[in-house]
Length: 245
Image 1 (cartoon, rainbow, N blue to C red):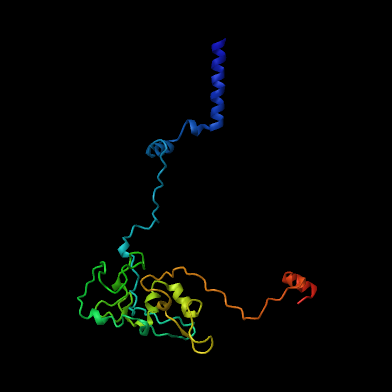
Image 2: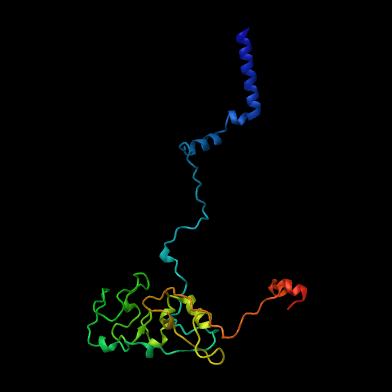
């Protein structure tokens, strides 16, 4: 009896599986069997490889990605100032340079472009400007020390040193040209005459060291500070609300 019941149970389970999966799942067609045989066997955990479609573009070397037409050659740009900045002139700097012209000594000295310690020279003993990334001939013309130079080799007069400083300090140079940085000479109206960068900053160590504040202006003799009434001692918004002046 037990064997008959077990066989009947297996038979019922087989019938249920056939009804759930359908006959093609248990008995695949010849086409399904051929497709299954042609499918690659993947390793456990490997992702299936999607075959490339016929519309995928072929690989093209990078050198073939050239523009259809080469651009026309143009002259290099030369900085000519900020068009929107108000006009100004710069206070001459050379009359205040004690060692200018530099050719007084350098015309008899051989040119040495090697960074080195400047022994027995009237210049600074070190060059903090740039933190070791600059040398004298980055800003001075080696063959004629009476001139400064730009990065592209153009000569700059010592009275126009801001053109050299502005190459690295662009935002400060723009603020200086528009009047937000630096100092103005003579007056606040009329023609603008402003000081160059090196009037306030040491070109070899431009960081301005801290200094003590100037003393307050003296009070004229015979004047005493008047005593404040309670109304004047109150904050300004309370005085405005009460009508006090």
